[in-house]
Amino acid sequence: MTDSQPAPPVPPGAFLLELVPVPVSDIDRAKEFYTERLGFRLDVDVRPAEGVRIVQLTPPGSACSITLTTGLASLDMPVGTLRGLHLVVADIEEARAALIARGAEVGPVEDMGGVYYAAFSDPDGNTWTLQHMPWRTS
Image (cartoon, rainbow, N blue to C red; front, side, top):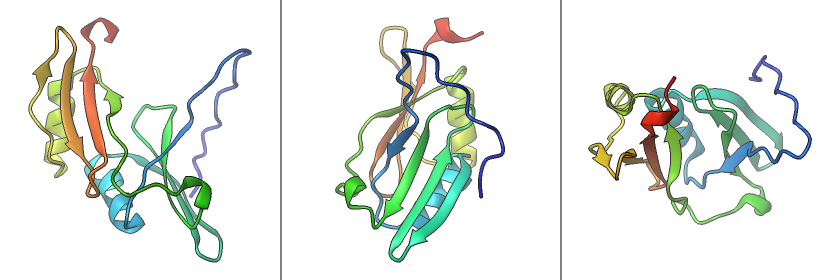
């Protein structure tokens, strides 16, 4: 499956973060978690060579995606070692409630001096944080 929306052009001098590898033990289980529990869009699920699988998923509204892979030595990392990926949201209580309604376990909202956080992890222990910065809402 490929996303039909073209990627935006890269402005001169820009360094766009596009893809973050997430180390998981079971791609199918992780794919289900990210699509069903978190609502990420499935962009790619391919097996380009024997023993190689690449799954790319994108959080709602994000220009940066994650990838789950197997068989690529260049992306091999210990499972569950990714820490503190941030998903910035406009309303943290609403976002947290939506994830919980989808079956994700999300910790309580914490106020860290006017910036709000709520932590959760994927089935392999990679950690994520919802982050709300009130001045960034429209």
